[in-house]
View (spheres, rainbow, N blue to C red):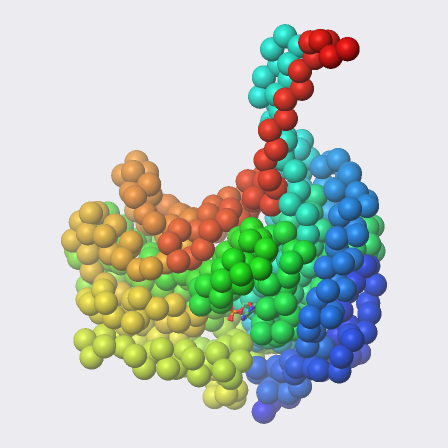
Length: 498
Ligand code: NAD
């Protein structure tokens, strides 16, 4: 396996201990799992595989913090101040955190850093939005006052995925903590190291002890213990639909904890007939499913193209795919790294192997051939909506292109999978896109007449998945409200109680 450039080597071994009550602590048992670098295959760290005793410790610390009101008792503005200070620390440490994320799951270093900076900025923006609080005064007639008060849920557990390790964790920390809850975070066993560092940065920023606890562990150990815990009030999950199903069972079989599931997707990119040879469009479409080597829940891996545009646009998209190459994630200009692990690479290969005979591979990119986790980007063409390439999430740099006849046909095809996470619509006719967006089974819809990056404010876009992509609002002020429970309170003073 290739050596990394000297600058990529960590200066000291990462701290793998868990974070409980604001401190790094040793696990109670010696069980560990290995975190490896998918590019080199080398061992990065042996990390504690926390079981029920450590999860109990972390939940108890979170409960104590919640009951003490050291956090829940602050005003939303005070919590926003502390979370903004935390976000600033994360931004300052983004190079270090990005190095950890990148080495654990293979994301190009520059992308890892940009995504952490973006997530820190989004957390600050969300904190600003939440400053005014979430309570609503309903009416104040005569001597009565009715308030819809947004109360925190209590102890929330978050179980997260590996594809954007630190950014996904930051999204959860922001929404859950701004709402006044305490949190126990279990990062993915593929990439826990940067997430653990967030515990140190939260303590430095002045977030009270016990408000953010972090337990590394496998899904079947720490994850399962959190999902069935009797003192966890809500569980926020980011991961596959298959695991989401298990968590619903665990929540039902334990204490009926509230669930928030952000699961898989198989999102369409729809290209309408008025686009002609729109400049940059092919590149943007390819980026839509190859970003982070396609390990993106919102990857636009179904490309629906109007039949009059198909034969002109497909060769341009294919040309772009063929020009892509995977390689060393530490190389400054590298756009695509390896996939996150050997096991995940094998899964993507197996799923691609399930293509129907009628699904034609029309373009394949390159790999450097230096890592067993590299997977060449691929573009298929197929007309059978039942194909596994259309119906199953691959979580790799693979898309399938299909023709559609008219907008109704496009909507029918777009909605014809079990998922409903996101959709991208491209047309020059914004007015025509508005009514179509409403008909899509998708939590997030980007309708655009431009291939330029979205404005920064878009990071605050709230949305809620549909179908088997899960449920629970993500993003913006509504994403904070999702971790509260509404309490209707009526104060009436008529002075008749003597
Ligand atoms: P995964 O479901 O395998 O694992 C996700 C998390 O769940 C990990 O922390 C894992 O340890 C834990 N887990 C696994 N089994 C568990 C169990 N039995 N009990 C409790 N916890 C368990 O998913 P992954 O491979 O880490 O991530 C990829 C998936 O995540 C894709 O489907 C992707 O679409 C999805 N994802 C969704 C979003 C979103 O916002 N909708 C964002 C990122 C990733």
